Image 1 (cartoon, rainbow, N blue to C red):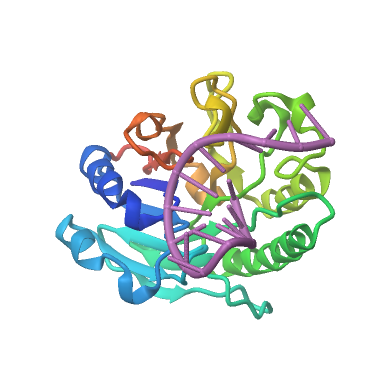
Image 2 (cartoon, rainbow, N blue to C red):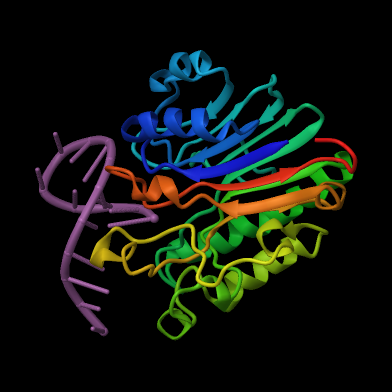
Length: 259
DNA sequence: ATGGTAGGCCCCCTA
């Protein structure tokens, strides 16, 4: 099974990229973030024509998440338990017996800001919910734009980003507490090239200079981790015309002796 | 330390 995550920064603008990439990469499940579309404007027809079922939770202008899958999506949920929040950042669904959770973690703006406090509170609620999900499901995959670079190896210039937003110790601790539930950062389960990133700011030619961060992650529960075959960053779509500032991340897994 | 680019919306907000 091949799963993926992509912050598209407006599905309205990026739908052609998504359709092209689905055709080329053939993922079984894809989580999208920052669709920036209300549900009535979601392009479900085009996605179904591409051969995917879809569930979505959107709002006007900001945020918005969707999950595309080859197989039906069941037990869809779109809210973190214990958090009253109009921001559409979560979509969990069960697909072929796999619990697939797609996240758009708050950005946080700047360390110490109101948005930063919201981010840390959100991550706290997320951790509690993921603990409960692990009790209900053996096979869990959590994907998304985490807006946290797990370690300095995931940052183009750790000095420049030291204790800055996306890299601060409290954010990394919050992610660490999620990993401590038993999840694996699938990318780090394999040998990887250095300076491998999933997001590059549009400004200052950051992509050309590979000044990026790895903030888009695929976390696997132990049963899935045991079956992991690959976990990669698909750099190509970031080179396309009018790209998202993020590029897709992918993981593949299969039981021994199959696939 | 600052600002730059992109997207959406209504000229400013978020990232």
